[in-house]
Length: 370
Image (cartoon, rainbow, N blue to C red; front, side, top):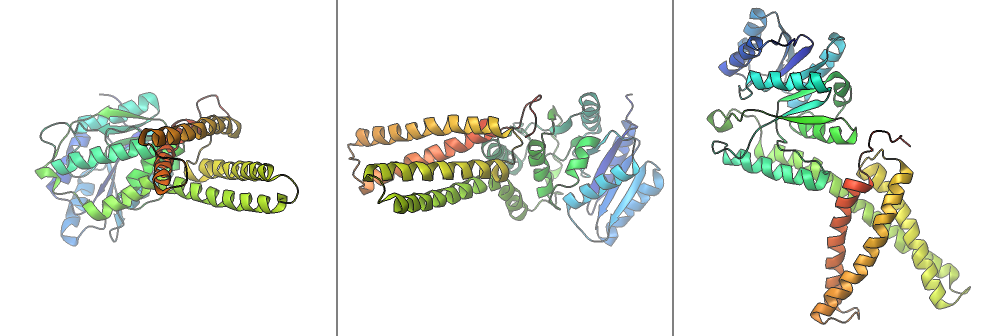
């Protein structure tokens, strides 16, 4: 059996039952020799599962939270302990305590991490008939949202089986979130910090349709989705701020230049000045605050211009084309403004996806940070 002595299993648990015993026995059977078991503020009647297992197995290190702090806090506590006490450790693999991760899959994820040095997500197949409808719908929806708003293609966004190398842990231990949203933040951190990750297929196991899960559908879903949608919200806010600046600059330049040149030149100069100024601001806001991009500024700016110019031409063509199709005159009427706004919204979303996937995409190997 492959050597797993440099891998620690992180096992957070809240109010466990006999399934926790099965999880630990399975991990030991498949060659794991170091388990960090975290009691996340369990009820007094459930504490004996922790103490009995720790006394029975010297491979277990038991960490206690006096009160429930959340899965994210439990994971980070274990990560900190690992970094402080396992200087020769290669990484950890996180496992849920409800016995829905087969120990062979846990081992396969850990070995893949050792071979590649990448973080590994153990991904389930949600197309199987025995997957609870709630879980199938929730994962598919979250995967689509991740792909559109974050530019990440993930087949299982909610997996608790993750192998994380030591190098990645040093970043992930500082990621925000104390409850289920921490695992979502962890995925976002992969992209923002350019941490390589792979997916490994695992068994899809649901015991009693996942009734033992402590996931609160509405409350915890909102905490997760607001993180993902935060990208688009910041993008929208950046656009609004830039637009306000453009209006101010156009008005200011028109006022300053009105007695110095012809009206048509005033209009052109003020419009150009406002658009250039607002575009520069929008570029830096998107780079630093929206997409947290480390791509070389010159490269990103060139891409931004290459997107902005065709988009402006496309806006004119689409607006004129749709107006012509419906016989609407470009006279500032309600019909014209509705068409204009519809085109702007479509291009706004289109621009978001292109900026995310190309303009501010994480730099490739060989590029230097600015």
